[in-house]
Length: 602
Image (cartoon, rainbow, N blue to C red; front, side, top):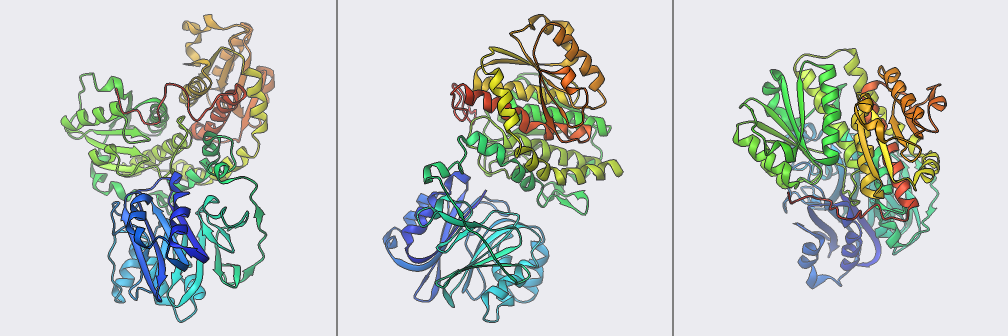
């Protein structure tokens, strides 16, 4: 996630730098700022860190300014470099803009603006914004921005300055967070805490005008809106976690926004759109086999992709753990496609698997969260999760983003192959509604906390599931063992009688992933077998399952859905259960022992 800062009042360049440093946790690849100097807009920006930006202005760091904006960029359109870094200017060099999000119709807007004589210098979608404002500007900056945002498609948060309005910042939001106060605006609370504890979170389609006269908020329709400031009750140190006790919990609660981010710009007119894969279309048209390589949580996402694509098409999917793949004799052909998944893009075994696949002539599609990572550089095509930085070692929001992106990729493959019907259209519609469903689920986490507290003293746990529930069971067991240090193992439910059931008893509970899907009657029988061995049962199922409390000691409900989407829908439940068990044990789930966020060794 990028970071926006805007400050108004008696400030110095140093204040902009300090504010920007408080957004570094969001992750970025370049940084920049803009301020007014003798009535002219001055821009400083660079690829790299805020520290590099600070060095650029070190000789002016104490210079007093009345208004300034700053930005940390996480590249989407155009590689990370000095030119693509924000802020961006219009032709007159009087209007300057920073932007988070993606402008989906930027190519159309850019072409129209070029026809009107505007000059562009970067590869970004952002640069169309100052030029559009310039086109609409007739002396009223607010009105020019209002007309501009009405023409933008996609999600965005922007901050704008104009040389002719030396004490004013204007911000606007649609789908990307923006917080305002009388002293300025920002993507998150930390940069503003130095100035006030009272802030106004903007809603979608709202514009804020901040000047020496105070702050006013308007709708995109131009009508002023009454806004009530909220009091921030935590310190800057706490605010780095946005008031959450741990980054892991914060990142679970960010999953609704991650779902929005991973789908933004990738669903148009009811179909999946991957601009990044334009050069792969012909290959995908005739594809009947896909190999996926990944490790840990990413491998569990790969398994969900395997179930999804194989069940809905004639494409075979082989999902393999990277550390096994790289040491086996592979039988890849030049037309084969290998999908490599790594949150960090630096996972050693996955990188070696990619190199092996490329030596055998396969085409590699990378799925990663880190722009400019080794995986993205060494792959033929890259799809970014756009999930923002994930600070906690245990992967949470990246897992949700991975499954969602893989599902979109599967749907795109099916569309290209001519496999498309009402069910596929329905899946798109349901995916688009998933963020709202997540929000509602996360409003009711107390039940999971209470259940987790009951099981914190057990030394063993078994997770079971069938079909789409099996990868979820694997991920649930992994989460529990890595942050609570409770031994947890996962099996396909049908495998219980082939050995694992021998371990069960009063001290060995079972976590059953069992939505009321087409395999529920089979899983139900396995649960009954576990109960007959006196094992306690935690059941993860969907609302309306009337048999739930007859089968289980404790039940976690998620919203009703279709079978294919339960791997996404059930994810926050397994993560929260593990989180609360670890927290009840007094452990730090953000930093589990012996583990690193990015596994760069074999």
